[in-house]
Length: 242
Ligand code: ADP
Image (cartoon, rainbow, N blue to C red; front, side, top):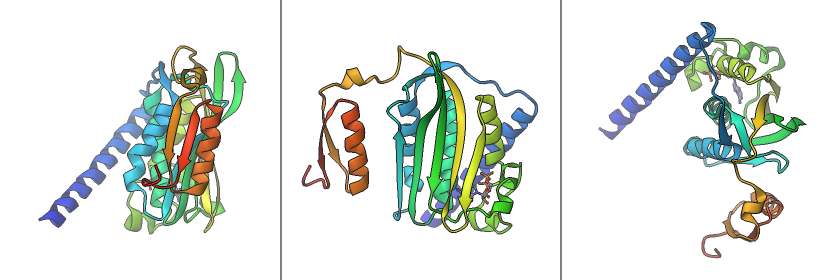
C-alpha cells in the first residue's frame, strides 16, 4: 500500500509540475507576466530555496550556497520569481548530478548607489551538456538528450521559463558546461537596494555562533563569512564536540 501510495504521490507531483509549467509558459507568451516590487532579504530567498530542495539531494552530493559579503541583503524586486528561477536551476542540477556538489553563489556584477546587478551561478559536477545542445535547451519543450524524458522526466519548459523570467528582471541567462565535468548555469538580475530591510553586519556584531559542520571546506567557508559579519564563531565537526 505504501508503494502504491508513493507512486500516486509521485505521479500527481509530476502532473502538478507539468500543469504549472504549461500555465506559466502560456501566461508569459500571452504577455501577462507581472513582476512585483517588494522589499525582501536575499539571504532568506537563497537560504530558503536551498533548504526546500535539500530533501532532493542525494547522499553523495554536497548542496551549498555562498553570497559575497559585498552583496547588499535588502533588495526590492520580485522574490517569488527569483525563487522560481533558482528552484528550477538547482532542481535541474540535483537531477543531473549523481555525486560531487551543487553550489549556488551570488556576486555583484554592477552597482550604483541605489541599484545592484547581481550575478547568480548554479554550479554542478553532473553529466554536463554537449556544446551543440547548449543553446537548444533554452528553447521551449527542448531537452539535451532524447532519453532524458524517459530517464529523468521533465517537460523541457523549465529553462524557457527561466530565460523569460530573467529577462523580466533586467538580466540574461547563460551556461558553461563540459560533458562529464558538470555545468554552470548563470544569470544576472537587476534590483533596487533597500537600506531599511535585510540583515546588516552591525545587527550581529559580537554575537556568539556555534557551527557544527562535518565538511571541512564548508567549515572554513563559514568561518570566513561569519568573521566578515563580525560575529564570533566557534567551529566543530560533530554533534558530540558541539
Ligand atoms: P526539464 O528539466 O523539464 O527537461 P529544462 O528546460 O529545465 O526542462 O531543461 C532542459 C534540458 O536541459 C534537460 O532536459 C536536460 O537535458 C538539460 N539540463 C538542464 N539542466 C541541466 C544540468 N544541470 N545538467 C545537465 N543537463 C541539464
